[in-house]
Length: 370
Ligand SMILES: *Cc1c(COP(=O)(O)O)cnc(C)c1O
Image 1 (cartoon, rainbow, N blue to C red):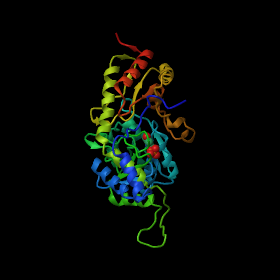
Image 2: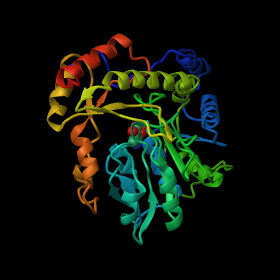
Image 3: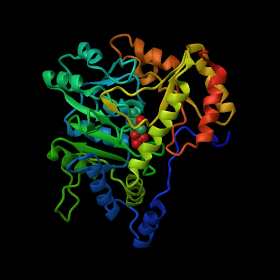
Image 4: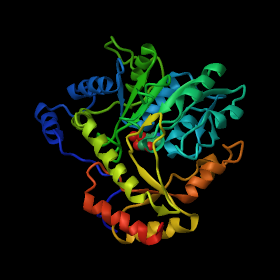
């Protein structure tokens, strides 16, 4: 199997990526601590209206240090949605805490306050809403609930750079926001992540943890805590900065793709294209349709046979070996969405002709209303 002719979500490297990468080599600065790292962090902070941002080697690393810096560890429970990438829950485990899985909303596919509330107990310390596929979770009720129970809110905004909740950028709503720049996200750094936080001291503690927790200002290697090598390299930051410069265009590209799908699928019987809640502005990072259960597999086969990459929604976490015991209650919405969901090509530069082909292939497996 080669590379699919029409991938699900491909990077668009059409800006100053090459120029910046060459500059790293010319300057001899490829590793962490280089000039692009600071520039990328400042540019990122500005892009989402944060005072500062701290880069990390991945989104997973960002989630891990966010949890640690917020004091979450053994004995603590952290509520995460069951419908998400496994990297939302894994750092909770790695931090020594216990993930508790909650169901999601059938329209936005994200965590709801109604699903979270009954799961809150004496050990609950944090909620990690995920802005799945780029669509914001309904944060106002979640934040109110967290406030009432004294819980930390860590946004998994890894998919949601460029998305807004009631006018506020995703990642800026909770105590901490975590982003990812892996290869298929809205912008890529090859690999990488970013942290923003309400409390600047906590954010600086996160930075400290990403730098092996080395105490600054000493010749000796002194470490007052256990830290990690989670820093971003200058090479990655160079790529990330070039991508960030074109964030607006890249989001606009995905939104245009979504508008074309929405129009094309409007009359498709038995299928539903992903939507945008009226309080949301989504980056439409990954776009999807819900189809009848018995159509899901044949549809993905059909698309892949024609060189179109398609994939199911993330597997419900409670059906994965490490998280089999993590759901205290049934998760019917997560299961129903997983049984019916298919992610379809959503790249910012998806050509109109390719998109027409995708729509036609999907229509061959579903019926248009007469
Ligand atoms: C991509 C992603 C992550 C992890 O980010 P990496 O940079 O790949 O480590 C975490 N959570 C979700 C929901 C993601 O989509």
